[in-house]
Structures are given as C-alpha cells and as structure tokens.
Length: 150
Image (cartoon, rainbow, N blue to C red; front, side):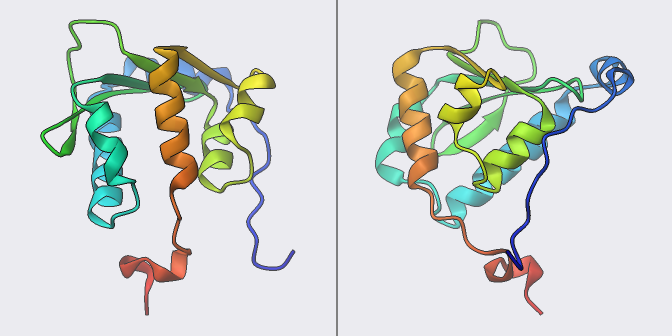
C-alpha cells in the first residue's frame, strides 16, 4: 500500500511514563484543546452533536507517556480544565500507539476497547455520542491541511 502510513502497536518504556507523570500536565490539555478547536474551525466535527457535550468533563490519559489532559466543551469552544473539582463524565486511557492508530483510522474504538487497548469509563451514553461524532468526521488528507500545502 503505497502512501498509507501504518502505525505499529508499541509501548514506550516505563521510564517515560514515570518521568511524564512528574511533569506539569497543563501543556497536554492546551495542545489537545487547540487541536479540537482547530477541528471545530475547520467544520470537521458535526455541529448538531456539540450541544450534547456542553459542560461535560472529559479526561484523556496516555498511559505510556504519563500524560493526561482534562477539558470541557462550553460556549462553543473546547476549554482546558486544570484543576478538575469532579470526576470526568467520560474518560479515555490508552497507550500512545492506540491513539495514533485511531487518528490514522487504522483501528476503530470498538476494536481497541474489546482488545483491552482502550479503556473508556464514565457515562455510556456520552461515550456513544462521542464515538459516533468521531466516526462521522471526514478527516482531510494531510495535503489538504493549510499548514502542509506548498
């Protein structure tokens, strides 16, 4: 398959996670929220479903890097949450390779979940809404992204 990127399943060494957990976590939330808001601006996320995310608290953990990001959707934007005062309504946990495989559409969330490579906890109905939103996204090819055009 020429031109297709295949993400192998991998796990970073435990030392990476041990160090990563000791580092500040706010940069992870800022980067994730920036990406989600860019997807909003590019109209990649189905607008009809976004209202269902209002004021919900989400957490994404990357197990083998020790990184964690908590965020919410409020007032038409995704926003970082630095000191969550409650449990996340929906939380995801996986190794970096699983997230990369999801982004590359190499694996779907159901497959990773049943292989126990993606942990999803919290509100089941909210989880289905988010999964259906992600399934509905038409990801542009990298050549279509403005930053990568030449």
